[in-house]
Image (cartoon, rainbow, N blue to C red; front, side, top):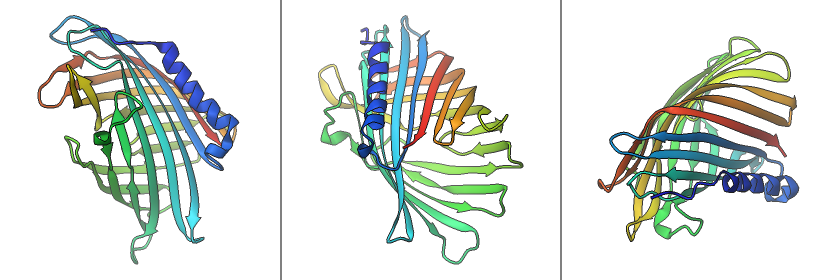
Length: 286
């Protein structure tokens, strides 16, 4: 079955979210906006004829303030959209959607010097349409320690909990090392990267990424609320342009591998061969 794969539709959704936040700043006042679009052309799959092509886009708007003038609290709202072109024999949805709200706070960890505890909760919906059924609701949570021994090093260690997911627990481990003003090693779970600042405007970077727990409730063969998981691993490099402190734009490209779309309970699986991706990302401070 061929999915309704339309680059124009994906670009329109991406642009609409971005323009709404730019022209109506009241939707996300005094906030940061991070939006991206990622293109992965069609690639063949293992053990069957056909190809899979994917376009991903998403936006996250976050706002941080101090509760009772003391406790730092960060709120965010994120949308994710995945468009799938499918010419294999396995039935797959044409689109996948995610809607996530998040609240996060950071506290001193008792009397331990230079050590902090970060707690986060992410009520979310994941489905194959914007009419999210109640069964697609999930509440992932995370808790990890942050240790800052000096100005160059930051260490992270903790755990993320995913109720109702196939993998319910994932470790959080990482570090940030900044040996000088130009070079930064940010080896953290979300977007591990190494960056080198050429000057005040241009930065070169290499980064990785994956989707360890991307699960969506979809309709398949007349059955509703079937769980479909999507996995990928990326490794690439790019350049970031910062014309001013409130605006950063980046363009990157690289390889994508370990890709699969799999229904839970052995209802079908597609292993997509490795390929390449290109990504454009825009970060704003509103």
